[in-house]
Length: 274
Image (cartoon, rainbow, N blue to C red; front, top):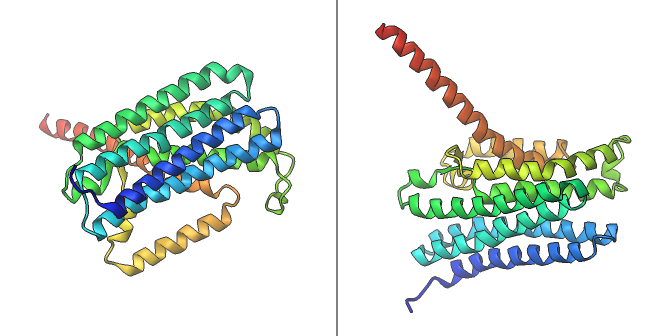
């Protein structure tokens, strides 16, 4: 067997570990679904484990480049780990939360299965189409699976925190918590279907980490960081869904703008020819 890069591999396996922990905690939550407090604690931990897996997934590539140990083995291992952390784990969350509303059980099945399938297709396409060129790593074709999983995890964490809304951070919220919770429960399977479609789409999404880390202009980087902190502070307790959701909307709005520009310029050029 050929030697493989130990440090990047261990970091990638950290992604798998936390993804597996998310799966374990979702299954534990399912077993205590009648106990609202324990269910909430377990399913919220599953969401946080997905976010930790996202961090590990972002770090492993950086570690590989810093140690100059990027290998084909690491790329394939990364996709296998992503399938657990950002495919199976969030799909189970979709299914379990849909089960909280009896009439959403079938939709939960469809959404969770479709989510897993689209993650597998997304990862396979990424492996086939991505090469070593710089441009290949600046943007993604289709929504990255960590972002899709992160949005499901963010909604889950928010849902549980709203359900047990006794903290001071919710003191300013009036009696709208129950409708908000019900709305979140209704939308999560639908959100799963939308995210699935975005993952297998050809919409371009920026590789945020690489663009920020490789930026040679410190001032714009500092400005973006300050704006990010301001958004986090002023959108609490909705920071996680707002941040991940904003990234998802960036790609969709960019795609919509490009479609409008293409159609407008196309009509304009045809008019000039006439």
